[in-house]
Amino acid sequence: MTATPTLPLIDRTALCAFVALLGPQVWTMRTAEITAQAASGSRAGQALRERQYIQVAIEQLRRSGARRISTMGYHIADLAAQVVALSRQLSPAGRARFDTALNSAMRGEATLVPVFHLLRTATVHRARGFKVRFAGLEDGAPFDLLVSRDHAEAEIVCEVVSAEEGRPLHRGAWLRLADRIDPDLQTWLAAHPSRFLLKITLPNGLRAAEDDRLTALHGRICAMLEAERRLEHSNAVVLRLDPLWRTAGQSNGPGLICRLREEFGPEAHWSVTSVGEAVFVMAARAGRQNEIAAAVRRRLASVAPTRLTGTRPGILAMFIDDLDCGEWHALRERMDLESEARQFLLQPLAAHVVAVTCASRMEMFGMPEPEAAPGLELRFRNPAHPAARDAALAPAVRSSG
Image 1 (cartoon, rainbow, N blue to C red):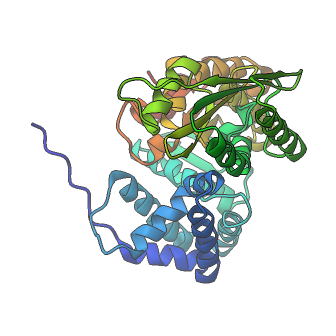
Image 2 (image 1 turned 180 degrees about the vertical axis):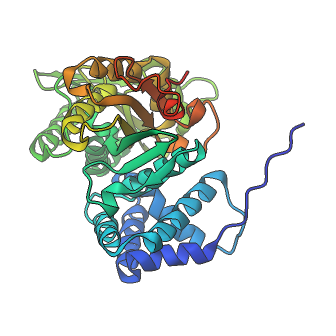
């Protein structure tokens, strides 16, 4: 049996230095906000905690007495230490730009992912034998990194795309709806103690910013239940209420959702409300499939003309956030990202792009295959670019798989 490798000890001093770099007061306020929302028990609060996974993990590691940690914890701690080291190495102008990026990461809906993506991309290319300059910080360049190996140079743009941009039915909107309607469902279940499945189809999807539509949908579901109707439909929504039959060994937990997911597909959104043995499951989906890979292509098309100078080969390093393991695996299995990236590379605006890379948190935090893609990322070379066959650039641009 192969022994599990032992990870190095955690450097808690570096974690404290990381918090000091962002500002202890800002860090404490941000952490308290995340903790309070997660502690509320709401689905949206738990989703916020998951989205802010880097900050949550650093705070846990910083306060924990354990020195040996999980693989994910080790990678987060290591990247945090690299942030501190980079800050100390930058020129005053570079440090000022870096401070701005760090401050932005602690506001509103922002996360630390863009900063960590930048550091990880630099680390990956150093490991491949490249010299790395943080040109965006040091020189104010439109791109982020300038990498060189032997005689060759390349510009790297580090971009983060949320999977929400490709979901017609936003996960955030769905969680808000589930939280809003949960008290109503509990009251209804108390008067109708059985097991139910409400199928919701939204032909036009639902976005997080569409509060009026969310409120209207909430009201429509409540009215349908109050009137004890089994079917409600319009151009905007189709609602169908069916019994949810208990099968042998069936529970109300994750096993139930897994079985239902097999029937409705991985793109459906779910929520479960229970009162004693009574259960109300809601399953929602849009009228069309998710287009996460297409959202990545749209971002590629927007950044290529604006963030590359055209004087050197360009690499667009895309990080897809707000993505779970199942979605990431499906994108790779269906080759959706490869298809969209290669369509982009055929366009004239990709003339200066020698390669496109795609990664997720699964690669950033060292998850094993098949959760993570082999080779640290997906990589698609542009065969039409003059530098595509340059041996010096090959480790950074050669297509993966």
